[in-house]
Image 1 (tube, chains in turn purple, yellow):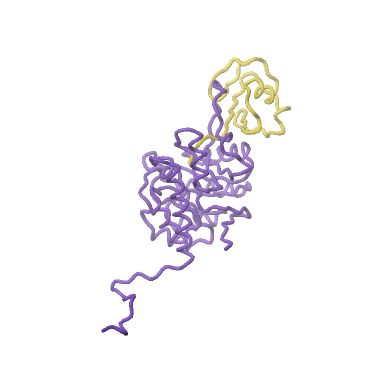
Image 2: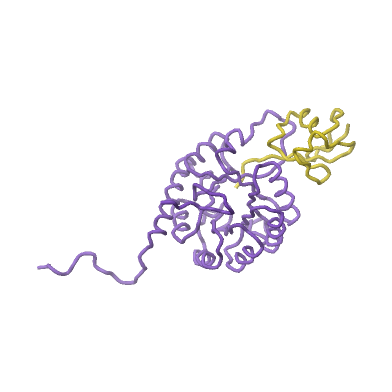
Length: 256
Length: 66
């Protein structure tokens, strides 16, 4: 069954995308990513440590020929910063992919969607493949689509919160509102959260803390892989409608 | 030569170009992006882009993130 996710001509093997932050060390990062079966990893753009040149580099462990590197603009609170980081990311990397974040609030890390829309428009015009991290807001998702986003990445819950999908109904409406791929980004705390996102019909799920923060990140990565696969299969299979009352599975005919 | 590199004022030895600076800092050029005075320097211009006294240089790479 060919069920590949394609965004702007780029084919993705895996519908589970993983972050590389918060791991104990690069070996754990590598092992967890391998266990997740993912071929997409997010990274952040930061200053090189010019004092300690012996410090290891993430890309020594994550081979860019094997994985699609998806840089983010995490930590950017203004359009100008998000543009600057995006352009640096493109120069440091090898592709036009950018996971665009314009953060609006330190406590919740909710996106500043006004800034996000503006930055999306500018970067799309510059040829970036823009994947904006946005709210679970169908109207904003449509606006981002119109501004040239290549996919939308609504949050399930605040980044790192592990609260799961707080508003699955909005995610469902986003799926009906935009023609773009919808990737749930943030909030997935355990395997069932990932399965729920996929059962709704989302195209992929991006997880960082849900894996990296688990007691055993490598096992959780494998759990997420199975959950995303199961959720996708269930979505494609078409679930039964929910009903209030019972319908017997065994026949009445032939009873004594 | 006084340069501000990644926010720190440095008394680097005299370097003419971005390539020389990266060599001096032992930084692999393929995995970084370089900005001088807020403008990105393209990789193919590293060997020709001249650095001047007082330039503000940013050198970034990819780190773990979500």
